[in-house]
Image 1 (cartoon, rainbow, N blue to C red):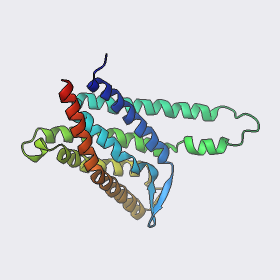
Image 2 (cartoon, rainbow, N blue to C red):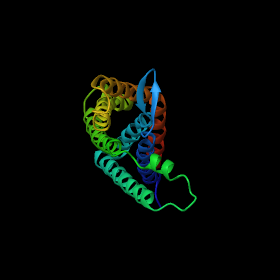
Image 3 (cartoon, one colour):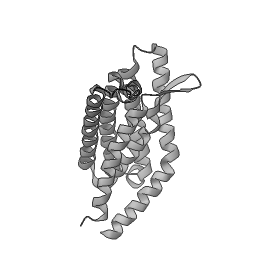
Image 4 (cartoon, helix red, strand yellow):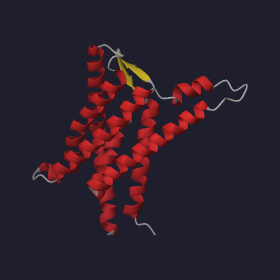
Length: 213
C-alpha cells in the first residue's frame, strides 16, 4: 500500500503534465491587456513552477527532473494524437472540423516554443532551487525565499524562449520585447501573489509527511 508521500508524487506528476497540456491549449488564444497581446497559457505557467518547487523540496532534484521529462513526453504524445484525430475524415454533416482543428491543431511555432521553454526553464528552476537550498542563510531556512528566487530567473528564460520561438518575426521587435517582458512580469507577479498559498501548502504537506514517517 502506498504511503502519503508516494501518493503525493503521483498527484504531482499528473498535475505537472496536465498543467503543461492546459497551458498549451490556452496559449492558442491571445488576449488583450491595455494593447499588449498576451497568450492565455501565461496564466497557468506559475502553477508549474509551484509544483516544481514542491517536488524538489520533498523528493529532490533527480525525481523533479523525471517529472519534467515525463510531462514533456506525455504532451508530445497528446499532440500527436490530436494531429491524427484532426487528419481523420469528418463524418458527413459534422460541421465543427475547422473549429476542432483551430483549437487542437497547434501552430507549430507556438507548441515548439512552449515545450522547449517548459523543459529548459524548469530544469533551470530545478538547478537554482537546489543550489539555493544548499546556501547558508535565508535561502537555506525559508522555502518561499528559494522558490521565488529560482522562479525569478526561470520565468525570465521561459518567457523569452517561448516568445522568441513563437512570435519573433511575426511581431515587430518592439512588440516582441513588450510582449515578452509583460509575460515575464505577469508570471512573476502571479507567483508572488500565490506565494502565501504555496507556503501554506508546503507547511501542510511537510507536516503530513513528517508525521507519517
